[in-house]
Length: 290
Ligand code: SF4
Ligand code: SF4
Image 1 (cartoon, rainbow, N blue to C red):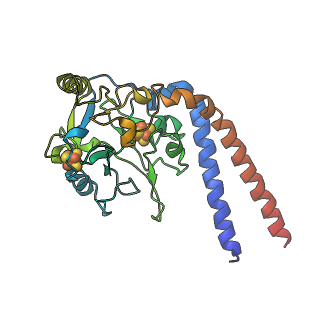
Image 2: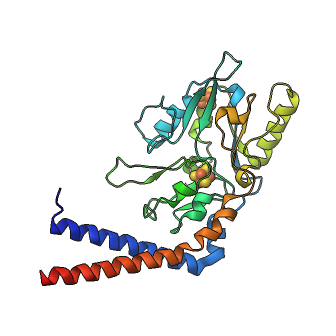
Image 3: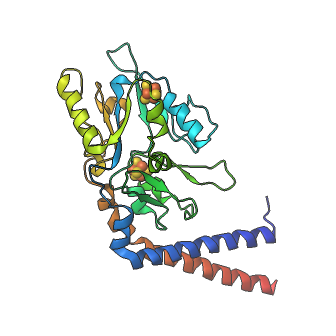
């Protein structure tokens, strides 16, 4: 379909605005440098920050956690869906296990990394780790570049492609409820204690105690204790994590690996903005001669 001149002008203007925002943000990022990134991403929270312990052996797949999340955040999607999407911030996956008649139910959502690469990658500071534990998102700052989606080692953030004004979507650990002295909606709703809310240090102790009390039952590993530099969500299970679809991400915080690449972003962004501006000027001259 042919694109009309006004549509082309609006498209160019939008591109220019995006380019200007990107260049401005990149310049700000370059100016704040390591200190700015540290404030957003490398704020390793102490053991007193809030965390969650998910004991997969205790999950019965009732999805009370998903329904509670749905109610809390007002989304309308199918709560039975097993994958995250632009509205579904938490999901329960049913996983068949070789040699067992019973499936396992595995919660999926943002792990609230201690050094979140999503926040490190965000050039406008729309994502940040709070001292309390949650990694929160400021829609007002987001320019839709979606670097956070590429950077997340757990492939958590989703984009609301079906919305007129799409945003990045992910669990915010019920940061508002925590600030109000309440626990997240999902852990409050869990009838079995499979999702336990508490201070990270205490939950790590709790997890270790469970592993020690039934060494033949539990896999002797706490997922999230060190993965990706440590996360605020911790998991224990009686089935190897790889069989349940948990990512092998190593223990190095991803921001340490991606920082070298991200440091080139300001120069790239300024270059893109310059090219867009040049294209705009050239096209404008062409239009004047028509
Ligand atoms: S799991 Fe992904 S989206 Fe969540 S804090 Fe970590 S890097 Fe960010
Ligand atoms: S509410 Fe608890 S038991 Fe039910 S699906 Fe969620 S984690 Fe599992």
